[in-house]
Length: 279
Image (tube, rainbow, N blue to C red; front, side, top):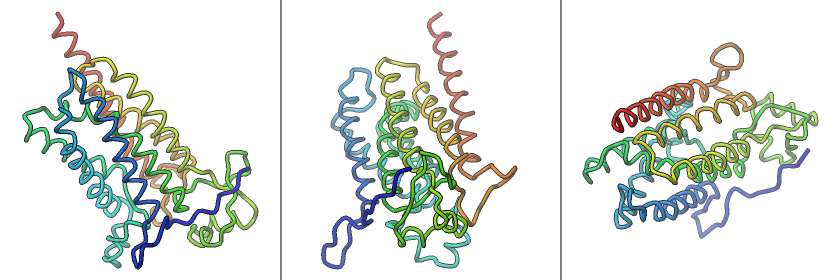
């Protein structure tokens, strides 16, 4: 069993302003997306020119940050933030929802597509392979923050936590498990590997050839939804929410299941329409 490394969530302190690893990871994700997007924008079938890419990344960044934060507040912590409204602005402590960020990005893509005379699904197909590296970076930020742990375990996949500052921020049941010598599943790393690395490889290879409009977007929804649904079986639900049903259904699974269904529908529709157009 591995031991959780000692990592200061603050990368560097510049006067009274701390720079947190968590925020830096989002910046790294956007820079990777910009670099990958620049490569895709050079393709003859690209709906985005290299000159438009900076605007696209800017729109996406706003969608991720605003949607991700608002989504977390609405889906996971609305009563808490009603009691402590100023905590809404403490983004360095974590608290970003992928599903909220996805909605924010979709709204941003709709606006960008309208302004640049493109279709909505042209834009989502273009940006889908650029998203997973940002997801991986965000999950690494969660790991450095020492948050979003999985169930207690004694298996080799677990990670022992010895830092008091991390232990005291765990829910009571996880604190007791750790103090009794149990490890915790590092579900942040599992998600970084699946939703980040694996999903990127799948989408990048799939989108290297021209595909019917909506197919790449559909595959993204299926891939993310399936990977997230699986990891949620070993990830602890938020303490103030718990399991929604059956002693295993989490909010993450509830939000991911529709993604899988919509993704399958998009792919079926894309290829059926494509075969009709070829007749």
